[in-house]
Length: 361
Image (cartoon, rainbow, N blue to C red; front, side, top):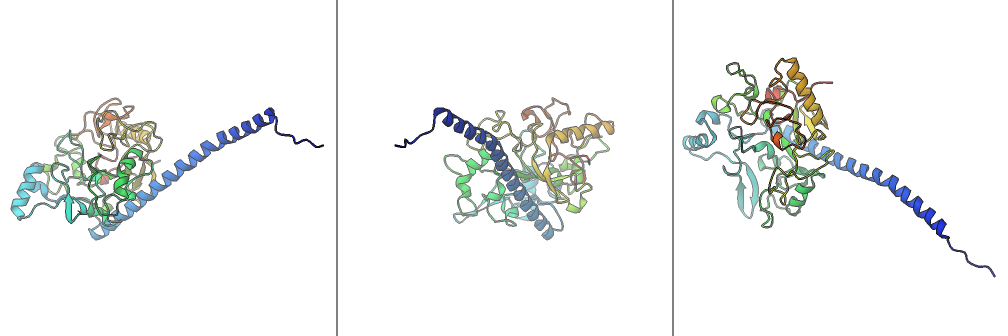
């Protein structure tokens, strides 16, 4: 009689070892492929945002998107009195940033929520502005016309996505914040506020010898510049991932207590030397704009200019920033960085749209 023979324990162990080895080899490759797919998706999102920005410019004399009246500074020396004077002079309220239509109502940002300025230069404790709001109707109409649209969210922005997904799934132009997690869920991308104001605001003031002039003391300071004014279109960032997503080691930033995304606030794109956010430039190309490169290029230019404290690629002289130092706290929330990488490229670029965020290779 012929006896059926099964696997021995040694043979089973060999098979299991081979499978484990294959899994160990394949898992990193699968993870890398997934990471690359998510990166490609974010690059595609940015490309569509840039296309929408160009379409906006085609209808508005080649100008950058804006939400504030060009001459608002002529009505007052600060935001609130200027808005009140504008309303009194024109007989109409200043147009607000429109979130969208929902339940038969037009939903807008109010003064208490945003200043309508590209960035809130007037307040060192309120560093927000319309540079964070490509989702608003004035811009989203050039895309899919929805505030909570997938195009505004990077696939690696996990905390943001988890918080916004219930609203993204709704087909309405705008959806009210959830009662369980109130507050608007801003997207993953932002404009350059330095590219949304007059280049003179962040240019060298010959009277003060500072790279900043109070926009409320200048005429047409809030007039958004034309794209064609970019002197370094291949070196000036245009739209960028606002959060640290590429090469991310940590997500929620403990500096912010009770963040807007289910209690989490991700690190910003300038939160670590390891950050390499997806960014578009004014010449149309898209690349990973590395934080480490931005820091080194800023130091290089500051040294060449003979102004090591403030003569680099981004301004430390605004009401946002203190004196630049490797471990300083000046700039766009550099005090909240993981490793004190201290840079505010894209946000406070010297000479605005005429300036550059990097040095050419």
